[in-house]
Length: 250
Image (tube, rainbow, N blue to C red):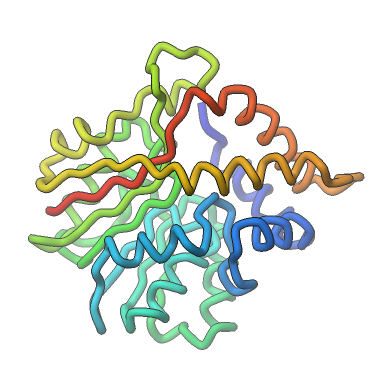
């Protein structure tokens, strides 16, 4: 089971009052301060994602499970696109709105509460969909992929970053990761031109972040302590997962 919306609300609220975790993520992943991230996509990896999305001026990006909106807003800034961010955490959505205001992008950004499987958006309302390190939280994942397909215009692109189990029977890994087979699930959801690519360089950056997190004195910082708990869990089964970039066309 993943965390509930209420648990994510508390998690995002903790981030707002504890800059240490953000500073660590930004330093190790090479992210500038305006790209507020609670996932594991580095600056170099973001370049690859932007290329895969192939957005153009004025087009609409759906940043699904957007969190605080940092990646989607950066892509909108680079490409002159509009971004609609959807997340089930109301706290994250409010933080994303504030970030858009601070970056001068409020006129090109909309953020709303919704689910991976039920965005609340109209059919064929997005030119591209991005899901960063979150597809495993959908239950089932194929329903979220069908929702991505529904909101995309014909020929639109979906780009997903995440992980898959090298062995789906490996019980060290969370069930939500072991259920993922994006090549099969994207095709079942109605996508064409499906490609799922391993990203070993992204994996190196991820390991560096988890290992660095464990060297920090967390004290009573709840965000850092939570990050260290996750680091121990991930590193204990790190050899059982692969880092991936999945792309497909509606």
